[in-house]
Image (cartoon, rainbow, N blue to C red; front, side, top):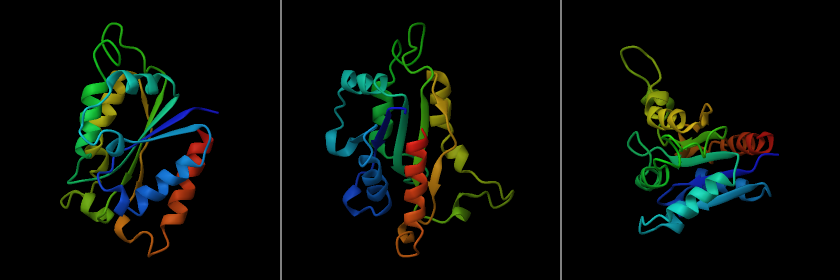
Length: 175
């Protein structure tokens, strides 16, 4: 079974229904390491060596975050900028992530139609994650199709959250 690292980047996890439930599901599995980045790095001063070691110790990395204004929360971007250094994640000797996988688990407060181009009808969600997908390619990570829940604000009340959590947990167990 793969060792999986789940990096939660949610600035208000305590008020989150979706991300809190997903994170709790991940915490229940012995082969999964969970890190709440906002709890650990509230001041945005990231321990680069510690985070790089975490990456090397795991086979798969999961970025878990809410979509905020069509982007990731600030700390996840800061984490990427600090941790994925030249010589570690890319460059001549930067091969430490090669062969590992990367999955984004994203909650979107709006419905799926908000993430579609009105003229073409094409979904733009993949476009929004393109910086992460390109980063994965540059660092040798195998980018997997994201696991997204739309209308996350109403997922619990509408009964959609349990099946989403089950799908996520199945993905964690299956690697």
